[in-house]
Length: 204
Image 1 (cartoon, rainbow, N blue to C red):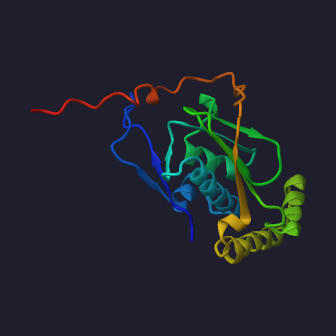
Image 2 (image 1 turned 90 degrees about the horizontal axis):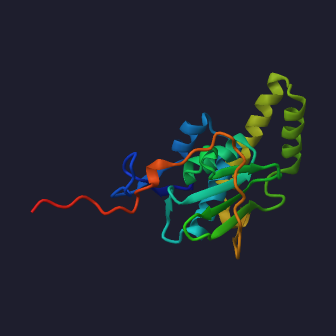
Image 3 (image 1 turned 180 degrees about the vertical axis):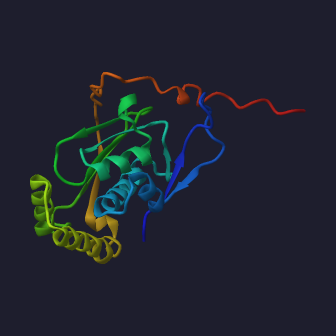
């Protein structure tokens, strides 16, 4: 079964928490990312475990999270969409560490979790084939189609069948110091400045 996410945001450019939450599905992630792929699905399942460990009530507060991931189009897009992290606000960053993994931190409390795909879960020969094609930056159409089919088959026969806890591991980090994101054009996220402001007075 595909994961579903419940997220909390502010209601306007000047903040205040919204009265309700939003439901985010993998279909929403596909629209944002541009296409369904094994990386997107793997990232979604990993992030589900990470957010469950960090936010036991099941709601991801996208005003209060920051995230690290591998420098991957798929994993980075999943991270940004589900946590609200942005490079330009210093709340999203990447590392050149292989594998499917995330480190998610709650800004207000400093609590952090790390999730990663267990070794051998993804077929090593398929991973090597993908890496070679990307390194060479060229491939025949038939090979592209064959790899895509192999990826889809793995998602269908493994990822959607086995429990996520068998495929991904998660740990709470006792202490984690976020490193400032070195980005010259960083700005301040103003739509969360007044998120805790009381609501307007009710008419009497």
